[in-house]
Image 1 (tube, rainbow, N blue to C red):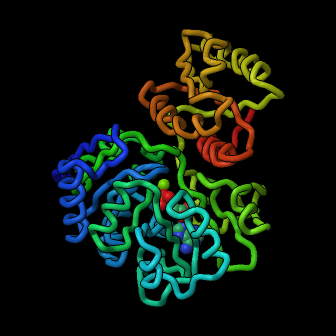
Image 2 (cartoon, protein in one colour; image 1 turned 180 degrees about the vertical axis):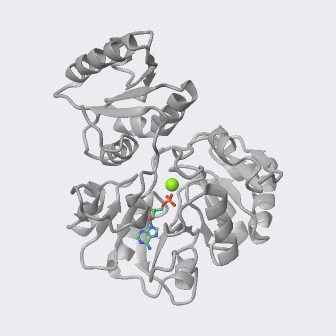
Length: 356
Ligand code: AMP
Ligand code: MG
């Protein structure tokens, strides 16, 4: 594929993004491309999305091809107004309404009964459809201007970490898509929480930016798909069975009672690997980076005291280990409360479940 990829850079140092003619022009051009069934990457509050007209199967097919994504893995449709749901969902159960009220726009994807005949390719032939309203001014303006539900998986090549900057998107998709709308680094850094609301109790299919605790506050009850945690159980969400991201280097998660214990274990393994001539990467945090040997590639992934900052930096750090071509990665682990559940879910997948 060798398409010319248009690049718009929209400054994100002001509150009112769309006050600038340059931003308005970028959104207008990007929306026109979407209406012409071309693919455009755009920022959301979670990660960058690779957008295409969700109603046209041929366009959605192009998304799968550009990413190299397995075709049985359905996409999320992004909307800017609740009314757009009428086109897509057969019904919106009260449970879904309550969650929309509380968290939209925001990092919560709802799996709803699908209206027959629409978005066949986006839903990968399932009779449910995943929908969310992103909380990012550029994303909302773009979807509104296009006037379409936009299918948008993360804008990375399948198997690479999700992109959290315009440069990440460029690295993976330059030449493969029509445009990249760069609005600076994304805020949350891990994908949305996917919740099935077709039953009595909301069922988390993928942990993400909205936590189980936040959902339970609204609905009283919440369940987590056993396929996410129980060995051998099949995940309900087609995407969760894939490895998601496998670093070039072999990755190990290191557990311990506290950060000092983890660091001691990591130092021991890193010393041994270095003696064998291996290039070692260490996923540390601001608090712990100084505990490690300077000869290793030590990257601080935010601050342990703020799981939100760990989530924000996670994918950038994983990409940097690949750039450094490390042979081995030892990663500190985090508490699974709040957004820590999403962080640990992604780290576990990247490590293929390997722990020390
Ligand atoms: P991504 O687009 O890369 O953020 O991934 C979307 C996630 O939502 C994947 O894990 C999909 O398998 C999941 N998903 C999308 N549609 C459905 C659906 N109808 N039922 C269950 N999971 C879904
Ligand atoms: Mg993805």
